[in-house]
Amino acid sequence: MTGRLTEKDMDQLEKWINTGPKSFTLLYAISRDGCSPESFHRKCDNQGPTVTVIHNQQGSIFGGYTRVSWQNVDQYFQDNTAFLFQLQFNDKTSYRKFPVVDASCATFSYTTGPTFGDGPDLRTFTSVVYNSGGNFALNGCMNVGCSYDVQEIHSDQINNGNMNATELEVYKVTDDQREKKNIPKPWRNTSDWNRKFLEELKSDIATFKPNADPEVTATRILMIGPVGAGKSSFYNTIDTVFRGRITQLACSGSAEKSLTTNYTTYTLNDHHGTPLHFRLCGTRGMEEQADLNDTECNYLLSGNVPNHYKFDPNYQISSRTRGFIHRPTANDRVHCVVFVLDATTMDVLSTDLLENMKVFQRLAKAKEIPQTIVLAKVDRLCKDVKKDISFVHTSQIVEQHVDKASNLLGLPRANVFPLKNYENEVQLDDNISILALLSLRQMLYFSEDYTSIRLEKQRAEAELARWKLPECRII
Image (cartoon, rainbow, N blue to C red; front, side):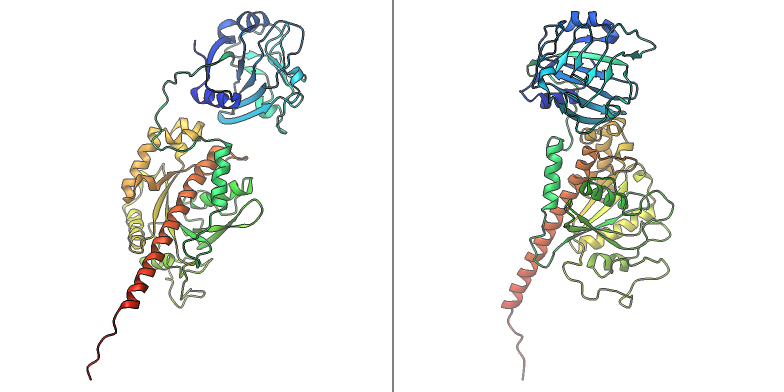
């Protein structure tokens, strides 16, 4: 028996312990060795640093780490490196570390199973517990916040309000470079996904300024795609990340007809309320019977369409339309086009919709505007990605759909960004936020490249015009 800890969870525990590479050897498992203080002490006493891991029926995983050996002695043990942790909650990855704040009573185990803190913050069991249909009703308790800093997290947000376990394991932790098995090679490399990387992405985007052209104060990113693909949800996801709470300012959901009827320019703010230097521009969802025509597409890209203009399939926008921008500046023009596709329905897009998108592509290409694809709802493609969105860049299924999207619109794979929007979540998930910000940051980089190239061409044309000789006139 090798235990239920995954390589990813071991990697996370290794980072939290923060003293170099670690190996994890299973010492004790209640499903194998029985759930009793006697069997626990027989297997685990005097083994040095250990990790205790509890799995429950709700799909939550939590436990504690201590550097001090377990002993059947009636006393608390001091350990200023001890911590409690959460690896999963309700079948979803949730990495949280809760450090010890009262190191004098970090652990206790006299006549009990592993116990952490003076609350006790976590007591696993105090006597024999029998297996009942794969469930152990542990007779311990959880009262977090006494000896460990849980940052206002309640016990029921860790153990679902009960001490019923499907497994409890104790691993010996040793200083050693373990051999990792069955780790798929990522098809797209990124930095390690953690809170530090999330803050780095947020900082990069919050401090972004379109420096290439002084006339451009805010980069415009135009979102195009079929009805229900996730254009409005993408804006809501980015807004959620920077506000620090779930938001729904843009109308989103599923419907046969487009929920977005106006051309809307969304401004996003940082956590101080300061506007960021980019705009996400939403359009009516593409429909077979009511699509944007060539003229409207061209006006959108060129910056002629006024904010809040309502699309009407029975009325074509023209220079006589109220609010029409006759002389758009570089600040009004689109700097990047994003085709938002639903990964689950991409294979069944109609020929008409595809052709409409390709018409838009040709217009954008003629203006040399960079194009990208956001492949939304990738969590519905793969059970591993649904459980933990950070597996997105190792999932072969997601990679295959990225290839399909790339071939569908003829764009490089590097321009296709898998995405999972905030939909049914009620609190932020670092991995969902990281994936969204990865795509947005690259869009901003592409936009800046486009602005730089466009400005350089304008300078070159102006230089040629300056040296052009005047035409000779015959008298």
